[in-house]
Image 1 (spheres, rainbow over the protein chains, first blue to last red):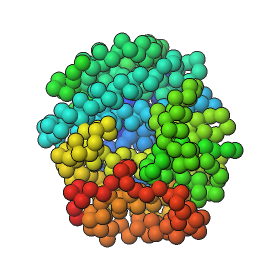
Image 2: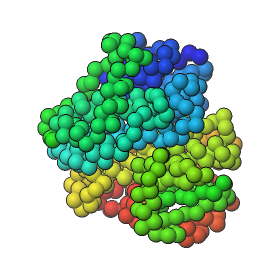
Image 3: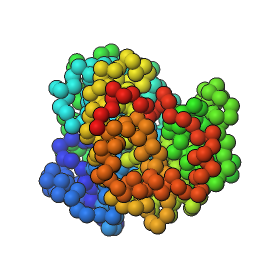
Image 4: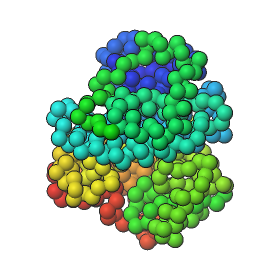
Length: 226
Length: 226
């Protein structure tokens, strides 16, 4: 099984959820965007296919193309049991889809008008959208997590994703996360437990991990508040 | 297998994608919101569970709860092969997730600031968001469909969902859909083919089908343009 991951280089983005799973499970893969650059992704998107991706990330494996972040993780978990217990597959996929909803909302907090425009062209709208995201969505989502690992007695791919979501929110909304944190100790414990996984130590310390920047999770001080 | 569908009554909403699959496959189910009302959904959401839903729709089956629209459809298709060919499960799920992205964007076009506020409280922002949705998202999404059925030689659940998405967009953005339609004859043919399915004739003519209204797909004339 050879896996080629296609995602824009330079930011973690949605590709990071796939990378964390591949890395933690020690599954070999090629990160085409990081290895060959932006143009390689643009070029590959033009390749005619029976199963075209609508957007990156997508994974090419054994002649097929799998797109949509949560779908890629479902596909990988079906093939690699280390990523998730089989009897929890719908539950973990449900958690993953809810995480991806939150990821999109974190993006739309700074891009409420449209992704094709610059942030600077929607700063006025972003002020209100970010307030709504901070006040309504962040507590509703974070407080929903009341357990330890999402399924069973060890990590699964959705825990890795939840870790990265918290990383992203900490980066983008440090004041708000600071004030909410005291109310969700279980979630913070999960975040720390993933950060300390031996399976991820090499990756998290490596340059393969992309820095936050002008991606999904952006720190604009004017959009944050406790 | 007994299925109880939990969704807010009165609008098609995300529940409609599940209803269309259950109806077309002639799978018996109970529509709890439509039968027992809004309070029954609110009450059930308070039930302690190991696998709590984050939000409706969710499906209760054999003591488990499955949430997230696309995950419910994946679960049903795994159990009922009439809904999808097994060797196309990732492809169809990928299509379904892209349809659900578009559904959310259709909602956010009239609610760009936040779902907890009335439309009247975000009309200014909605003008720009709807223009972006009409000009950028509708063509990119609709023109991506270049085939006949999404998989194989007959309908699958994702075709039913695509039908309902086109129904919703026709309702909410009639002027824009009128101008884009000429460029996507394959998609319109699929929409008409689903509308004419004998498997759906009873349902589509019944009062079980909820009317559009103040749901995801809303017709605000000021948000539409060719």
